Image 1: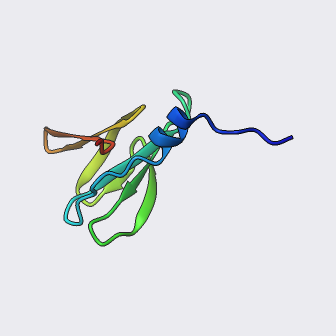
Image 2: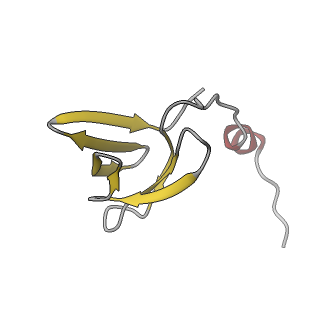
Amino acid sequence: MTTTTPPRVARSATTSVRISRRDLTLLGTSGGSASPQALLRRPGGRTFTVRRGDRIGQDIVAAIEPGRVILQRNGRTVELTTPGP
């Protein structure tokens, strides 16, 4: 069985966004509330997956929510969100 993707869905799935080559970028989140994980992109272009409690350099992944990751270092909090148009 073949289905056709509605034009509105196809447009939103293929929206182009500019991703910084110099910053850590959140590409997406998955796993729901039981076992959330996030796909991140390093400045050099490599991608990797993290879970709560993982370390990224000196930062600790404090929380993962849909479209958002919270990092903490020495009492400082940084929020990463998925890039948008």
